[in-house]
Amino acid sequence: MSLFAAYSICEVAKDAAGVAGNVFAFGLFVSPIATFRRIIRNGSTEMFSGMPFIYSLLNCLICMWYGTPLISADNLLVTTVNSIGAVFQFVYIILFLMYAEKAKKVRMIGLLVAVLGVFAIILFGSLQINDILTRQFFVGFLSCASLISMFASPLFIIKLVIQTKSVEFMPFYLSLSTFLMSTSFFLYGLFNDDAFIYVPNGIGTVLGMIQLILYFYYENKSRESSREPLIVSYATLDSDGGLLAIFTREPGMEYVARLTWYIHARLEEVNNVLRWTIARKHTPAVVGHGLS
Image (cartoon, rainbow, N blue to C red; front, side, top):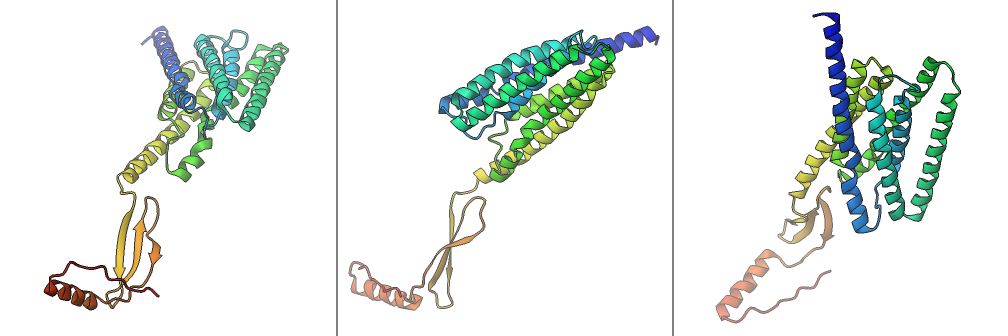
């Protein structure tokens, strides 16, 4: 195989990986729609976090700038996908602000202003660097940091997932799209020999895989718990036949004593009353027993 043929195959593979990355990235961008449907329906952001959208916006802006010809060469697919992503993140942040509580809203606005300020500094600061390689290194290093932050941001809710043993607040399609997109751009970066692309996306691939493993683990645990009865009761008797205690088991809890009392009526005494009632053919009467 000639060198030209190998180069052509590498270019085709790079473009294919880049196009796949764009497709999976679009899936990542639209994946929060189901979450926002719930937020709009309930009129509240509940326990959902707005941090992933803030991180994603910063990531899209920096990576969009890195993909332009002013910073790096032959990265048009990086510019297009991140331009679209930035628009999606702006829309999500606005919707989140509309339904967030006051304290959360103030925090989100502050973070949004900070993100726009940081990007403005990066943009104008990088243009002051005359050497193109130094400029690429500067913006590329920042894009790596922002990408890693974006990939790791859903891990902030893992503590909540572990505490509640529920994946309700860790959307599956968000984790899946992150894994597929980062894998595609990891290959794209390898074929383009761009460490600023394949290093962070390689880390994103690993983090996305971890999220998927956690999702399937706790999803299976949730399904097993949902098949259990809500309350199962057990009764124990003392040595004389009296009812000693009632135990109940609730999902996710050990057997605990909910009520304990002693009944002084013996089983033999109860049987005697029943035999006496049947012999006289009377309607059974309610017999009361005092409790000490």
